[in-house]
Amino acid sequence: MSSDPTRRALLRALAAAVGGLTLPISSRASRVLRVSAIPDESPTELQRKFSPLGAYLEKRLAMAVEFVPVSDYAAVVEALASGRVDLAWLGGFTFVQARIRTGGGAEPLVQRVEDARFTSKFITASDHIHKLGDLKGRTFAFGSPASTSGHLMPRHFLREAGVEPDRDFTRIAFSGAHDATVAFVEAGRVDAGALNAAVWDKLVAQGRVDTARVRVFHTTPPYFDYNWTVRGGLDAGLAERIRDAFIGLDPKLPADKAILELQRASRFIPTSAANYRGIEAAARSAGLLN
Image 1: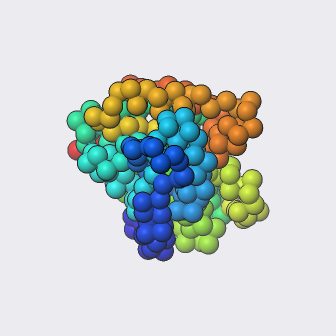
Image 2 (image 1 turned 90 degrees about the horizontal axis):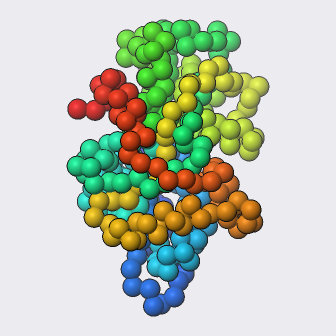
Image 3 (image 1 turned 60 degrees about the vertical axis):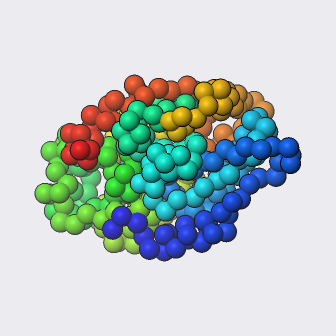
């Protein structure tokens, strides 16, 4: 399945609750920056991560900032393409899709330092799985079909290791999000799964996964992943101010450090579409792009 029904219900409820939500600003502000994000974690976690960042952007940009929740990855791409959102947090693969969908209009502004060397973790609760080759004949969970770190790159590295998911797995599940993949493996719904390394580390640090039961048995080589992307046609001056705002987050300042920690970032740095050519090539090789 492409998305868990409970997760979809939560997203719809959140959309209803925060639809039109705008963080407090001066009544003089007349423009709204509409921001969204791929739903790679639970709706409540996405909102928790965004709220301080939204307040910071409002202050730096002197304009209202509205978070627009979506039900799945494809909805973010369509929202950018249709102009319903101005700025979106995308994975590498979602960015490639948005770039193609907008005819090159979607433009990446910044990435975290960590996104230049991102990795995925392969996890299992089975005593019989120790390497990628051991996955043949097993059941497996990816995250969202459009996830870079939860599907595309794990699939890419599986194929490099001689494991063809559609042929060699007895069943493939799509959990819809990284934290859901961990839940699938921990509950025994699948033999193994793959997810974003940063989410795995966060869940372990928060004690939300039983590491006596679920373990990492493989980590991928690094690749480029997430970025903040603006829609085509956004005012160039505003895009530059948004880029400067992200780059201006200073880990030496307590308030900025708190925002960066929520984003699991040490700093934000400029990025470009060229950084994601490898992602596009992997997606085409896997038959995930037309």
